[in-house]
Image (cartoon, rainbow over all chains, first blue to last red):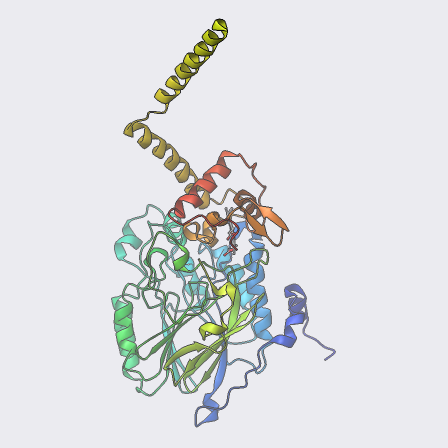
Length: 358
Length: 136
């Protein structure tokens, strides 16, 4: 242990993560696949929103969130098979932001797969992101599970290509969550055709896990907690016995079940968002089964942010929300109930006051 | 005695005259109401613009990044006790707190027109919600 990797040491010091080392989640899930080699874990980091100020200055708060997630993920034992990054690495899609974010992600000791977010995309339509990370949508197989990565933050061509005088304005218009000049997210016809083709070779008993940035459900259009062609994408997934969609964008705990498809959202490393129900002037359709995250304490800048650790046993996810300033939460698929449930807080009697949002 | 009565009468008449004038001043028309509402909405619009502005603080962060449509600002719950500050505060102090911290900015005077605009905007987004001072 004398020859400690200096990078790693600096990292731990920088992130102040030493104390966390003893509390990282150790998975103890029973082997659920007949073939134990098929049970595995992966980590999920999302929504870092790395924001450039000027020169070499970036918003410190968001930097700290991502640095900490990377440092803690590197400490996981057993080691995850890979890490997903769920999109919105940048705030305004600039090279400076994407480079700075990529540099932080490069410290991960694992293979990392990337999902496109709208904040990465709408400046140059994902061109520089592609140079750094590769294709906007793709699939891969791992230990008997079929993984699909979608770019779900596309929108109508007229909005993307014709409406805005400059790329910078287009980016700013899409970056404002509550901006009425924004436009609904969608996967689009071309990508749906690709998805249908991609899935046509996959057996219906093979677990399918889809990673997207937007929810692939219609929850609240005003903040783009929404995918315009959600039903068409869902229709392609319904024939599978075990399908799961894991998404970012919403910066909060959400989970849902629609037919055979389980949905689970992940936290941001940057900042939490209010639930749509807290906006007094609009209607929403948030999943009733979700037990919300705790209301954030603004005096702890990392409260209600964090990253996820996912156990994929039997093709279904058990997701532990690793929350920096709060009690961790675990939401796992319950085969008896046929939907994801919070392992501790699902019963109304077990809820705590901070889970009430208004 | 008669003189005293006269004085009293004079005072009553004078008072009525004053009240009479103020009764007239209290009359307003639909046009007035529309204008006053428009004045308020102008300030709301200024608040909304500040809400998305990177210039309120020093790091380019805007209120709207964390509070879309001013959600989770709960103006109807103020004044209320903030445990971290250890006292009952007005919503403007919490606005200043968020300017100082997430935005790394300088606090505004409590009667700064920008402060009034921010409060006008969050109150507007919260319209219709019952007052509930003190609620955490």
